Image 1 (cartoon, rainbow, N blue to C red):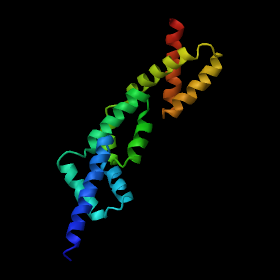
Image 2 (cartoon, one colour; image 1 turned 60 degrees about the vertical axis):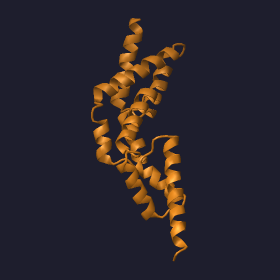
Image 3 (cartoon, rainbow, N blue to C red; image 1 turned 90 degrees about the vertical axis):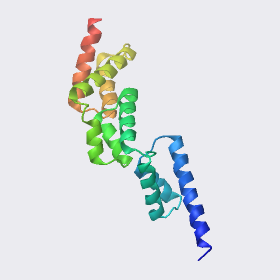
Length: 165
């Protein structure tokens, strides 16, 4: 029908505007954008075509999003690889891409990050009984996703460092 063509153009422009608005608010994965278009009732076929086009021209880049999130969560919030992996998975980043982005961060780097966090927290907890401080520190690091072996090693190293000062 002659009348459906302008409606399709309007729908496509609306979808583009949604994508551009979402991207202007912050980097998003293709999966997150597809979900947003679905919520806005954009047909899947149109959403897929537009997302593929945005990927082609470099407006959508899951690798860049994954690397940025990984860096900001680790450096800004002290998250472990496990916590970052959960966050990226929730955002729809492919498992292979997550593995690639997190591969350079080995156990030693995670331990160093956890130790730095533990050292800072111990200073804040200086007035607490040692056992209370340790218990709170275990919970704090565990909530950031660190394994128990890293948690206890980081606390041990932080306690050693603070006792030497």
